[in-house]
Image (cartoon, rainbow, N blue to C red; front, side):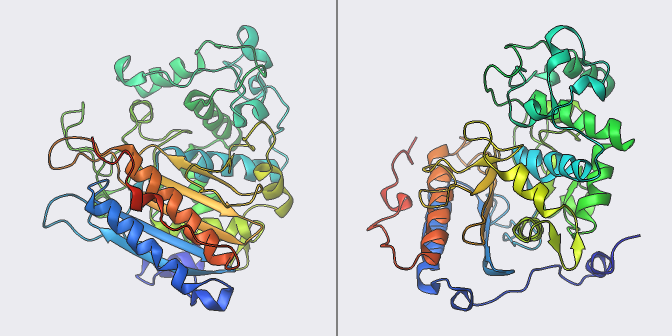
Length: 401
């Protein structure tokens, strides 16, 4: 049974966090005004058809806005932070897969230093028998980045076999290589322990209790209609809207540990606030506070357990604290959480969607806008620090093909 709040949302009551003026939570409203300028410049430069931005602090959203449209077409619907779904791409790794592991860890059903083979006997050949759950989370398993499954099989069962049969490129624990394959294996581990598919487990244990009613793998027709498209001319012979863009996730049936999740900015705000609250929201505990602290603490280079941490200069900007954690998605999505400031910043865009001239927009536009929004939000909290004379979006470096 759905929680009462989630049930109300399905009946049309918006599941938004409370909205408060920035000044009431110690943020400068005038400084946040710069978000409009940098995101609108990104849209005007055709860096993406549209974007949704939500900034929150201290149990409330202080900035929630949609820019542009779902598509480049003149008749396309405007972006709404509450209604527009985006293909989250690699944000799936933390919002779904890592969170599922956190739930199982709380229940003492998974051990971080146990070999993967304890849960997946098929993953035990050679050096793979020494790969641990922790190494998968830290991208230190030795597995390669990806498998190009879409070009090798049309069977979901066979795609899963290929993932489990993947040969290590390095000895476990000796190097760090960002690996979609490792997160897929971790998704299989969750399924083996939970005795149910990954999408069903995260919906039942995370998304439904948090009233994230627009967060799902494989959106149905009603949600697909309000999903931002990712590609007009795909290798699958049709435009991609509400269908996962990532080829390996598609080969795995649309449900994968590394990609496949769709969501709105408003839903992700509820997820982010839950983490800032130490694992609870609206009286519902999802994860223990100690587990949130453990998994989001930097443990291997810039990596935490499943999460990335802010190295400065990328999508988290220059000013977030060393304890800030988050992740990005190839399609144009990002989520950053700064526990020292009680702040989260969400930017969702469909950067991959080809422009009217048929070209993919320069990624520099997306990169600059995401970093600017993070810096604007952080400096709106740190009002004693000087703002830059110009933002990255004002300079437009690398914005022209």
